[in-house]
Length: 226
Ligand SMILES: [Zn+2]
Image (cartoon, rainbow, N blue to C red; front, side, top):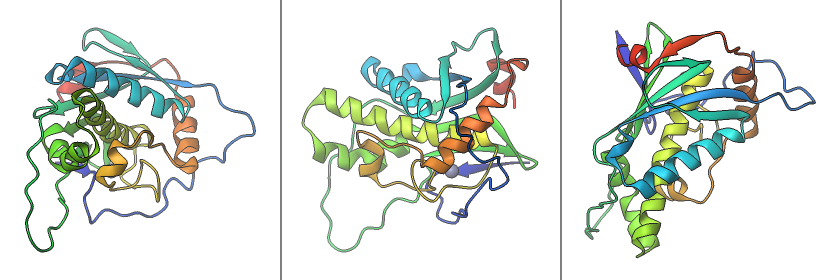
């Protein structure tokens, strides 16, 4: 039985998490390595793909994670997260249609991480169609520049990816109270210049990644079969 964690799922808990994790030490821990395989990254433009990689790496770096990229072949030393981009990640957005009355925000999940028998797996999906639908209007309103729109789409995709990686790294189904670990974000937050973890989640991730050695060996192909 597999169920999924979903960013923007309204019913998820926002309770504090990982209270049993060790307190942050006075010294900054040595960064832990995480290898990420971005499956279907070719489904977007080169500019958006570059933004996705740089934003994911920069955000996780603030939490003490040294990100390496994997091409999907061969063995990987240390921890591996497989992030599959689904749908179209091209910077194409539906035109804005003005309607009267209240229009509720989309409650569609933008990303999901697989959970089996209560264990969070190292495999997640980032749903580009839903992201473009959710953040498209904010992107169109923000700029007329095609390059800047590609950049903003890359930021939004990266934030959803980092949110799912948070679930993977901590092996938790819970969410943070603020920052990128929150269960939901506004379109404006998804495309903003920066969206980091709150200090609590930064410390928890740093402790989690730093506590894992390099002895674990797995492959992207193994993860794909889960
Ligand atoms: Zn979540």
